[in-house]
Length: 46
Image (cartoon, rainbow, N blue to C red; front, side, top):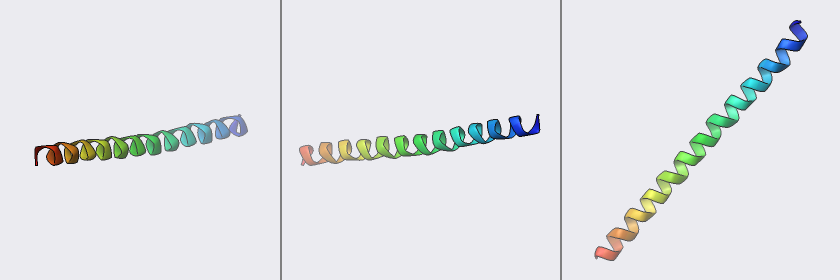
């Protein structure tokens, strides 16, 4: 029983880690996109 439950915990942990990394990357990308949009807007107004 112990042997079976442990790999499952590892899988869940790995999934959670990759998910958090993905969300971090996605949020960074969205921030970068928002910044570039703002830069474009400020450039166009100038």
